[in-house]
Image (cartoon, rainbow over all chains, first blue to last red; front, top):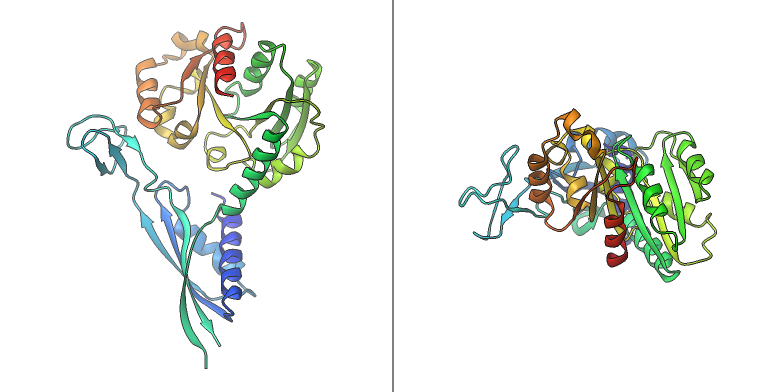
Length: 115
Length: 216
């Protein structure tokens, strides 16, 4: 959800960074999108192709790095992916705690053309 | 001839929203205002809980920003009780965000220190994702919604600083499984206390008010 305003924001951030570096075009934008960030990469791509027209980002390729959500076991000090309806650590069976792994949503880098 | 360069950005998409949220929180904090973001499904009891808390803190000053997609029903209810309330209608947007809230905080006349409730749009999904300038997030969850809500909507439960379980008088009629619910909450959130309340007769709100006073 919210992919439209979020895509506008991605284009804004990427265009500003490009201008800061005197670039004339953005060729590629690498996004890190966590499984639990609430965003669907394909939906962002769909809006991106439309909204980017006329901007420095027009025609840019969106590269999306997906990150799987991980929980942390405080006893075993390991991180692990959750099973449905369970927070249990695969090693000791105790319930772990959520981490920030899987909640990422940021622009990692852009590739630009500089004259 | 043009050359290709890679530029590291590492910028969060929500950075601008979060920056504005922090501005709001700090500027209201300086005026002695404690901001509570009240979230929960439609019909969970958000407005009723706000009213009960206000009734249990007669010595305090309150301000309320009411968020709804449409209508002024909740704001009218609050105003009839003499509460200083202002309505936001988002006309379709499913959550409040920091720029919208900042705009409205400038429209209220904040003349004394006190507590500002921002009642978010009835929605167990999106509000949890957005900082709007609050000091704490209060999640309202009713027994009638079912005991599996923490498992299905983890972010809301994870982000909450305090959880009010409402409509506790209905537990037996809706087959509410306390253990399953609490296990779900604890798996996501070790810190937030769960207060069982009944907004119709006011049960449980004294304890909620004690918590607010201690954690302000």
